[in-house]
Length: 464
Image (cartoon, rainbow, N blue to C red; front, side):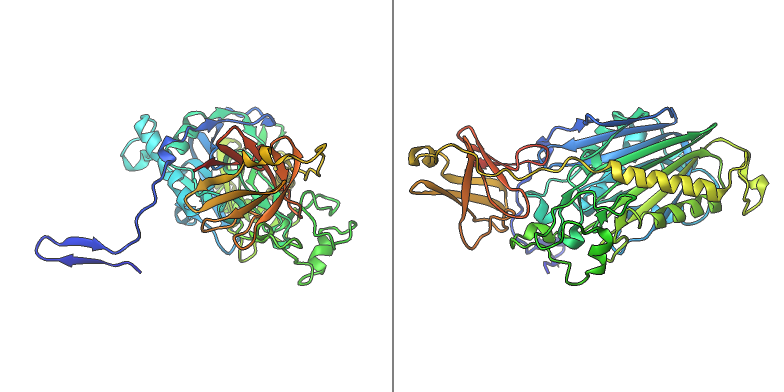
């Protein structure tokens, strides 16, 4: 491991390390509040902003409250990544949370939560006095590895743009915000695209909302036990449900019949938030968090594994209801005949709805449909080296009237490995596919761009 050593009276530091790779993340432009499918609800106290870097793609989701609110946390997964959650475990009754931040970028994305806090200070919303300091908590999901061809991460600029774009009552669904490049079903190699979901319900004056970023190892499961999304192994019976997959362990855990590494991406986390406007004591709010979090094992199977970093925050904005401290430590009646058990069941069902709402439309493989093979002259124009990042490069070469691709950087590019060239099958003018369990499409755009999986999850390489 590189070590720093002190030399002479000036304590000069010498670090033996490889040269740093240049990063262009400072040049990226934030895209805020993107998404055509949006959950809309009436709750002025709760504002939500999302930010995305299309070049990743990756993103961040910021939940901002109109005043400091009471918050708790429940951690179930074996690999969580969080910021400031220990404070929420101390059981204080004083509201202290201004915002909850969800981010991609794994541990690098933890930069987003303190960046939201400093933005609140810079914008004169909070200051340096102890009781008026910004209280921001956050959690991250892993969206690197074999699913992406670069290491772009959500940074300070993106997080602050999302905060400043926050708006009440609107939450983009699907692959947006922190769910911009999430997946589900890695435990079984299903590699389904996922995203963020939300659900809302109002009972009289009481409001409850559930929000989730699904990046689970388990498969998303509906209330009939059906697998909602995922690229099945061809050997699995089409009738198999989530229960059948679980019963088949370990033989059912066939990551990829085609041998691609993409399906084995099993670094996962589901991060979630439950919000109610009802005044709750810390103990009541904690029981709500625990019950809702445990209930998510119905919708995500399996859930809270050693490879999942599952974290749930629960927040009470305290806008309606009596003072919970006057009800005693463990009341059962919250008013109007509603018990904490009832509230927890309602929130649990909402969370299941939110998980189902997180699933975007899945890309489908396109079979060869080109009339006639491209000529050698056409293919020659595509030949060259295309760089996607400092560690992923695709070498495209022509052999007679066929086109081949080989990964020549440090890492493979999905089904295109480093050992043997893979033939690209033409499907349209300038477009090719690689057959396999997971859709893989390549589109040559202009003289210098190669797009892998064109569309919402595309990765762009440039001729070097």
